[in-house]
Length: 101
Image 1 (cartoon, rainbow, N blue to C red):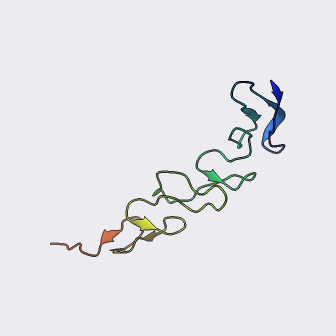
Image 2: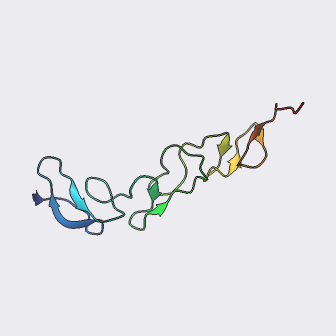
Image 3: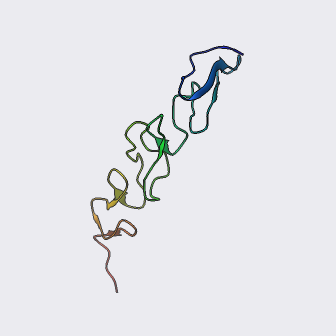
């Protein structure tokens, strides 16, 4: 172990692995220097969960919490609305070309 540039809030100390440079992170901290939230969380050091309403397959923006990859024809900061060309509730966005027989 050697002295590193570990984040004083997220790391348990200022020592890191000689090979990888990985600091020893506290719970709810991640990244090599323990200065990031763990996956699917944002807003270090508070680290709030991403709120993408089950429509995001990746992570949200680490600083703003905006969902980065809305799926299932959804859009919006939190994948809370139907994408352009779709209508209905964000739980089930239907194409405007959809017709019921």
